[in-house]
Image (tube, rainbow, N blue to C red; front, top):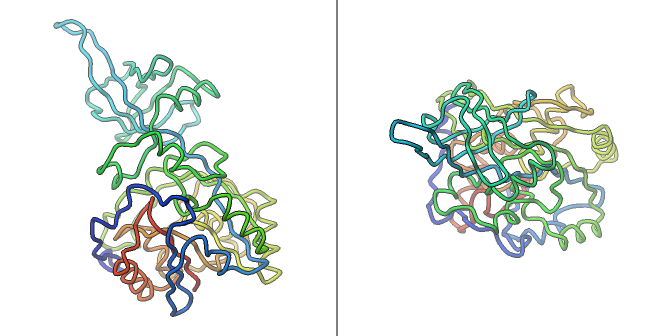
Length: 348
């Protein structure tokens, strides 16, 4: 299975840099069996049945991109350097792993000042990642980060424009609860209060799980034999209640439909024994064609990067030839791609 099997031509102008407004007005390409239907996200309840269950990732994206300065005494006096930091994940020792640019401008033990309230000391560097110890913890840290940080937009958006205040709302789901992600579960960005009400009226059940999406979700696959690719690990949790709800839906004949690849990866991680159970920990599950799904009956997801692990995941669910046709249709019909783009409902 070669990396080139998952390539396709994507016109640059189809990469969305802002989301649809209202959220549920985004387009929805429904692929059910061999049929393709152009719809809108607001039509989602029409494609679902009473007793179906949507699984939603309730992670909360932190404003993980920080701009600061480090100062140092030199023979020329006090010298200053601009430093950019992107937080990756908190470590058990209280430090934060981060990517720092330019890393060579900071030495272990030096302080980087991000705002009047927020600063950090570079403790050490591990495998190219900086370990930062912040001056604040808990709610004080969260409040200072909210003021000083910007949303960590995906590279393909950040290359086109800087993050702004709108992104603090746009790049967050309406049910975001548990802070820790540095990327949004983007299929869930299409949901608004009106759509949630329509789903409830349809008799569609909802289950929340938590997977803290990491920056590794944007890392390219660099091996030609995709089966040798090593996935980044992300922390997730499926509660006993969530697992019981999903088992009950399966037992009653309803469909379990994760919203987004993050929710899918998590529930399949919790079901490797054949049935979903309560689960918590780091998952580096890699889903590509040949994977056996134990829980997922369908998937709502955005349109993904060429040669990405996410494209491999949808190919595992729908089949590679089918996904090529789905994506060819999406390009021809000018669907908007990636994090702020349109959505697909994939029903094998």
